[in-house]
Length: 460
Ligand code: URP
Ligand code: ZN
Ligand code: ZN
Image 1 (cartoon, rainbow, N blue to C red):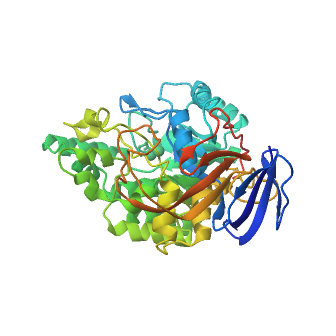
Image 2 (cartoon, helix red, strand yellow):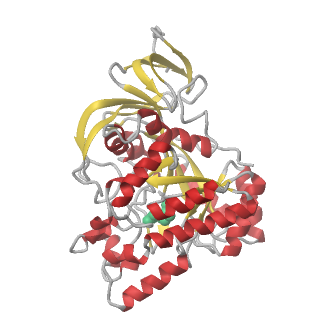
Image 3 (cartoon, rainbow, N blue to C red):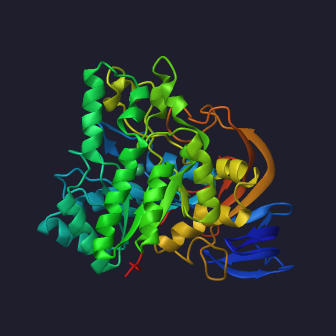
């Protein structure tokens, strides 16, 4: 059925105007004034509302075996939550164990998403071991439509790679035109600090930050910059959390390293005092890199405003407080790392970014959608509103008012890190390739309709 969105204020990363949008066969086929609805078309009245391109979350974990447990969401629960919150495409990290075969991991993750996700999806391929056999598989995986790698400089003994592996990964990425996303923390420093605090009897969640201070993250970024420079490789720093790390990324950029930076909605809105909450409640707020001192928030907001920070993601990694976070009650190093936020990213960014005057509407769209599409080979199919683009649209009501709460969320986890946070604006209608998938906070889409987005490498 064709779809007609009438009278909305269309906002992309570079344009803003009032028009109607007509969608047929999953794409945008006409943008004009006073488009007459053909018989049978679904009509959405967008008067007084914005129409944004579907938002893209470039960093989520859904199927994630990690720290002795599994992240709680499925592709059904996560994609419903994503759509309710205005995210129409997510990029999930494939995180194989070191002993796993990369191609088997790719098939496993693809199999979990295909036929279950309601929104479109693709993956960053985790490189958690690099040898000749793995290299061949990475080349085949890129041929299957994966145009980005993921490496971890942290998590030694689990997902973390050695320097030799980092060197070889970036060499291959350069050869193939693939961009490498990287978790930047010095794994050895983390391990030594963890051992030191545990030996001193410092076992609570408040010690998580102290075991991964800003300098540990800054060293990880510096390390990545050195290796990327060697190969002239394109790199993307995931979940950058602090001033010190941003300075290292910018120093790399200044000397010509092809580097882009992602930050997370969590780092902008909550800080390290949350992980210091008594009675183990702080465990809800344990993630890596950790929530930082509040002084970093203005720096990250300013970086987003000016484009020094390209994208805003979630690193959605849902672990229940009652059972899973509890695994680390007597040892903070055993608390599964992660703070879920897939459902809330767009509304929180709109409220505390656009409404508070910290970013303009165009940077909002750019950071939450367009930049990810461009960096990861989805543009202009995704990330903008133009003829021929997929009809992924968010009709957004800036006058809606609400409060974030675990009681009303769709993600499958028993808490919300932003509990009680007021929200000013939310999606009225969300479409995926021309079909309405969410309306006023309710999922009305089709599980399994989400498509695997095959991508071409473009970073030579
Ligand atoms: O704490 C985090 N970030 N958990 C998810 C895994 C990762 O490091 O991305
Ligand atoms: Zn990470
Ligand atoms: Zn992550």
